[in-house]
Length: 128
Image (cartoon, rainbow, N blue to C red; front, side):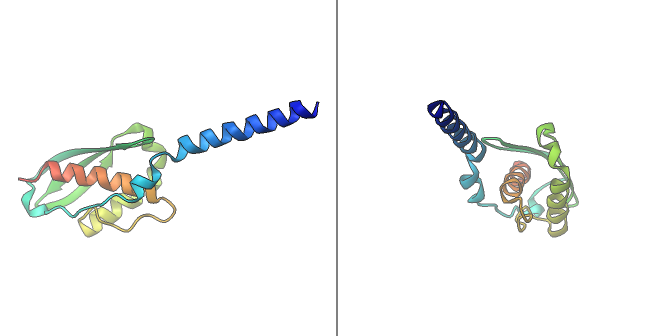
């Protein structure tokens, strides 16, 4: 009986470790992402799309530029829609400073970095 209980506990611990490894895969790499400024004076008016994907973090950003200013940003990946409130904070900050290089949103470093990278990729796709 004790063996069965110990086997059950060790099996549960093993499953939890595997889930933890899967859940955290890619986090370290995303936290270290270099986010660059993009020269908005080299981007024409228009809508630009950028993607960043690493492990379970996938952001698809649609960035609208008018008069060499970022006027709108949307995450078009429905999978990340559950983070709408946090994404709104990121969008607000990027538009406010006109750069994807913002301070991370407290408690959401990995999501912030992944979204920033998608925005940077979108803007870079519009550079002439």
